[in-house]
Image (cartoon, rainbow, N blue to C red; front, side):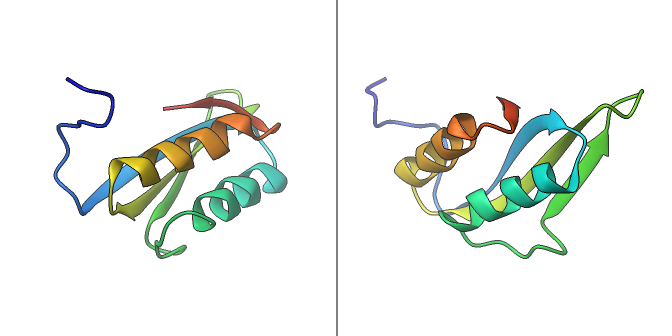
Length: 88
C-alpha cells in the first residue's frame, strides 16, 4: 500500500484519542488543537475518561475526516503538543 493509500472511505467519522495529565488545560488543548484542523460538535463529539488513580485522562474527539492528509495533520498536531503524552 502506498503512503497516501488508506482503508478508510472518506468522509468518515474518525475518533482520535489523546492521553495526558489530568487538568482542564489538557482537555482544552486537545479540543482546540483538533478544532484547528477539523469540524466536530464539542458537546456531542468529545469524551474523556480518567485513569484509575485520576492522574491521567484520555480525551477522544470524533471528527468528520475528509481525507487522509487531514487525519495525519490532526494526529501530528496532537503528537507535537507538549501536554499530550500519547495519541492513538
